[in-house]
Image 1 (tube, one colour):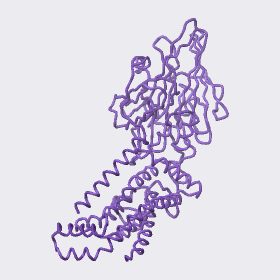
Image 2 (tube, helix red, strand yellow):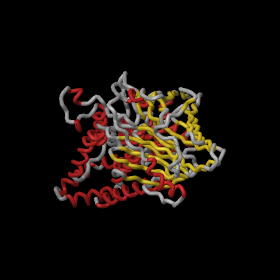
Image 3 (cartoon, helix red, strand yellow):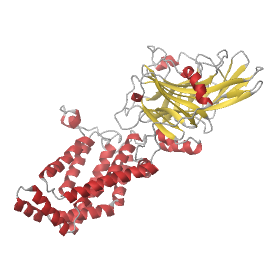
Image 4 (cartoon, helix red, strand yellow):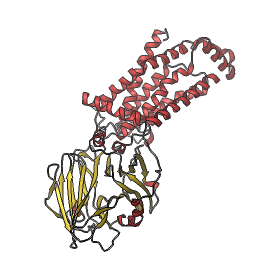
Length: 558
């Protein structure tokens, strides 16, 4: 038995070494610190940083729609979003995701992402110019811009203008693509007799007092790619009036929810000082301050901003990385440590979904393909287990011979395994291989918006949510939350119990009791996981049972 435990321990250690090694070379470059270099941007940021701290406006007792109706606005719309830009301050503070509903209810409203500063749970983006010259009149949040048009579409750009009355004219051209990306080109025309120095800035401000944070393993908070390194900050990571500051060249920063995301995107040649801030009273902010822009007398200079606000559609984010040159934009999706598995798994599932037209069937076919890939390894494992089961009568004789002397029973059993050239730890190998697969698929089902609200057959209307047909609904009685599970988890537990019955019983009685409880434990644990994951695990168990029964029959074991 010592050799058995030694082999098992070695297998576990080697599995984790393999996982971490692959993750190190192929996983996400993620770090909590970035080496900062003292630069002009950083020096100016120390002087101007206070100017880009957005003060929380008092919340008014009105709906966002009532607040929005109080100001003149530019409406925008495409196939993915609708909303408006407030002309006062040229602020992005009203955006709905028209492809996504809040819930599965027939009359469920569209997902609302951005909200005005005086609404509960404010969420908006602001951008503009700052100067070290405090006498210079620049556009602010109270500046009312003039517009050439009242509607922004992918085919119709909008141009805003404002004149400070002292020789500076500001022209802002806003375009919207077919999805979630706004591009803002700011041009400053200097009609004065002296050169003007300005610094571009942009921020996203958000209040999370009533933010319904999910209980999933997906990162929700602030994140960004800084100098090609992913940075992530949970809201709890920053104390009140605290901030994290970095210098970067290119990259992006933003707020990340489970399925939704807003970000400010720098040009790849733009140097900037970026900040992640907790401004207190549940107000959080991400912002950047760009490098100095010198506008010569009687000339003009331009600076481009990009603002994304929408859904975390993986293929779309990849296209933004490739076509719009946004570095690692797909990392807005929390692929986790198993990035090298999670992302390919998503693309395989998405391909199967396109082929079958139903995500549930795609998950089942994915499970079958995985079992096919693991067939040779599982064959060796199940062959070893079948031989062990064939030796069960001899093991029973050993138990009867040595009675309750566990040490002698284990020694005699191991000698028997050695004589028959059986490795008892071989049966654990498929399980260790399944561990990263399981967690990767678990991640995919939690992060992929393509699986959100995706139906299967029968009562499964959302594969990303737990089975809704629970014991309390079936029995019409109160059932405590932890044990109030659905039918699919119960079926999964039953297949796990059937599979366990095919395995040889552990020699140690304590181990036997522990293994007997495992199907029950996993049933209630997985009962609150995404139903898609439970369906995958159920079919995987069924295929394992079929394969194991065939091998047992081949080895003459009933």
